[in-house]
Image 1: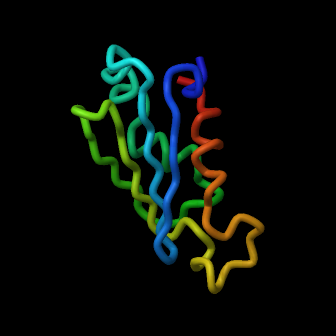
Image 2 (image 1 turned 30 degrees about the horizontal axis):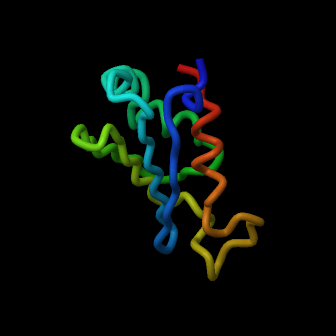
Length: 99
């Protein structure tokens, strides 16, 4: 199954750092995403984009995970030539991940 079947997502950025929140629709699916969506798997999934560390923060009361990805935006908004300088499409890309 794809993450989009059980969760939604938002993306934020600061400089060359992108963060992606992953929020389950139903709290019964929280343990599943904790098991299947690790920092290592997210780093591997975005290996062509993310050049730095990926750190996962767990927010069980919200049924959410937050991933902070260093060196993910090609230098940041003022330096990147990427079409999506803010990395807003990364949340949609993560939702396509198979678990």
